[in-house]
Length: 299
Image (cartoon, rainbow, N blue to C red):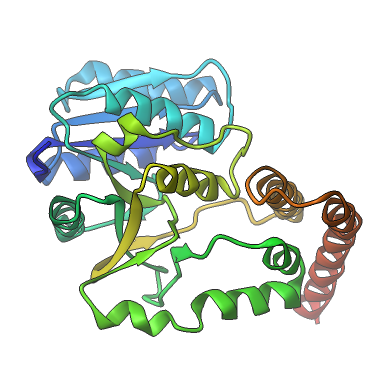
C-alpha cells in the first residue's frame, strides 16, 4: 500500500478529558493531513461523553467518528478499539495514535509518514518527545530482562536501568532516524498494514508496559520501530499528582512489569518468587521517599 499523509487516520483515546481531546482534533483537522478522526471514549463521567456527542453532531469535523466504550478497560484496551477500527479503513495507509495532552507540528506528521513510506519493514515511527520546558524526554527504550525489570521497580535500580537504556542516547542524533526496540505511544504513526497483520496491545496491561507487548507482537511479524530526530512533539504529562494517585500508579507499574516478565520473558519459578517478594518492598520504598520529600517541602 502506498503511504502518504493525505491518507492518514487520527486516533485519540479519551478518558474524562473531552475538552482537550476536541481541541486536539480541531488542530489536527486544520493541518489537512488526516482523512478521518477516530475518538474512543473510555467509560467515565457522563458529561464528558455528552461533550463528544455534541461535537460530533455539530459536524465541525465531518470525518469525526466517535466510539463509546461501555467499560473502562484501560489504555491498552481502549487504544485497541480505535486501532482495530482504523485498520479496517482500506484507504488509510498510516494511522496516528495521539494522546490528548500533546502538541505537535505538521512536520511531525510528514516526517513519520516519509519514514514509513521509505522503510517497509517498519511498523511504527515517532518524533523525539520533549517536556514543556523543552528538555528531552526519552520515548523509546529496550525490552527489559528479568534483572532490568527487577531494578526498575526500585528508585536506585531504576536509575541504573535508565542509564543502561539511554547511556548512548546521543546516537539517536547521528542519523535521520534510528531503529529502536519499542516506542512510547503518546504520539506515534503506525503502518496500517502492520496493524492488520499483527496482534495489537495485550489488553491484560491496563496502562504500563503495554508498549512492550505491542512491539513484541510487531517483531513476531518482522516489523520494527524508529525514532526520527528531525522534529519533536511536546508531551504535557497531565495527570493527578496526589499521593493516592501516584501510589496507585506505582502499584500498577510493578504489577505490569511482573506480567510482562512472566508472560513475555518467560521467567522461571524462582525468579517469580524473587519478584513477588521484592514488589511490596518497592512500594514501601516509594512510600518512604514520598514521605521524606513531603517533609522537605514543609520546611
